[in-house]
Amino acid sequence: MPNIEEKSLVVSEIKEKFQQSSGIVLADYRGLTVAQVTQLRSQLRNAGVEYRVLKNTLVRRAADELGVEGLDSYLKGPTALAFSADPVAPAKILMDFAKANKLKKFQIKAGVLEGKVIGAEGVKALADLPSREVLLTMVLRGMQAPLTGMVNVLQGPIRKMGYALEEVRKLKAAQ
Image 1 (cartoon, rainbow, N blue to C red):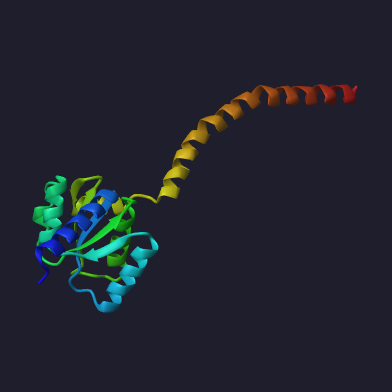
Image 2 (cartoon, one colour; image 1 turned 45 degrees about the horizontal axis):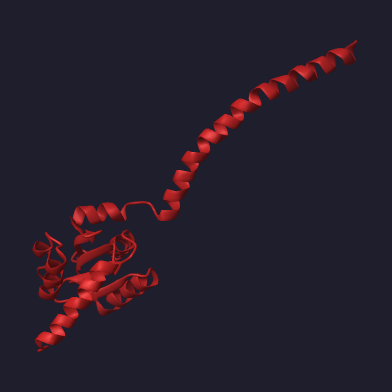
């Protein structure tokens, strides 16, 4: 059994992870095989997400020390935490993994987004957000649309003048 100093070191490490992460997802990992856990860890690692199984009491203590409220009710049973600087990545990867493997027992319990606790539905909503690249494309398309419209409006008189000059040329050529 770890002594108090070792536990306090783990609590301080968890606090550090909480402070460095803008997105944390809590999941109940029951029902996963060793191969599935290895595959999940690999996917998370590739996305820069740290996946850890931690004692609920130590997580609770770290959250209390940081002032994160509302997490206690989710810290029951086996809990794995996915820490990431990207708030959407852990939610998206865990949800996609559960869907792809048709896992019934694997459940998202909750999440912590910028220090605020969100429920499982909030995590699912995060997972459904489009990727950063898609969002940037949508913003740029929105910014580009008025410019394209303005270009078409400004080209209208020039185009009409071109048509008029072409008609004048045809009339002179016909005479």
